[in-house]
Image 1 (tube, rainbow, N blue to C red):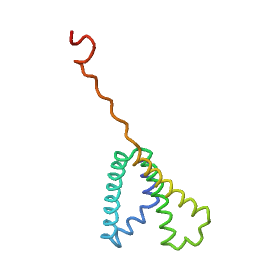
Image 2: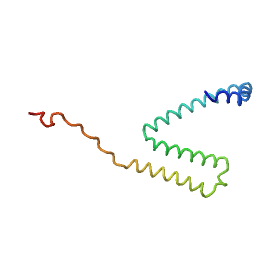
Image 3: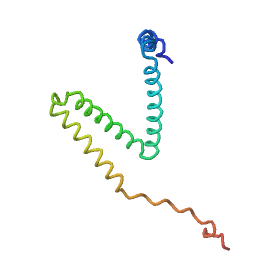
Image 4: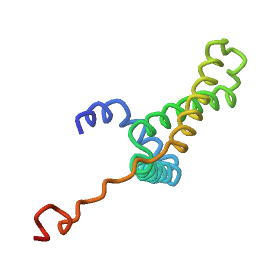
Length: 125
């Protein structure tokens, strides 16, 4: 809401020009973007519930590295990557894999058994 005036000033003419020239594509783009945002939020909430806050943060880092890698690969910028960028991608994927493995193989703590009121001292006498 706070940024709405800036968006209207900066993109008002572009939006209505696009709406006038290609109304179906413009409305489809807006509706598609809204649907993707809803699906993203549902997936994010499910990942927080399923993984943990740490697992979700790691998943977010892997997502960013994947986006960078795919954009570089698809846009032809991969040839200009330095060794540090390749190393960063490699370390991110390896670290995420190790974390997932350790989390999956970690022993779960046994829940504490509630005390039985009949076995407490003085309950039977």
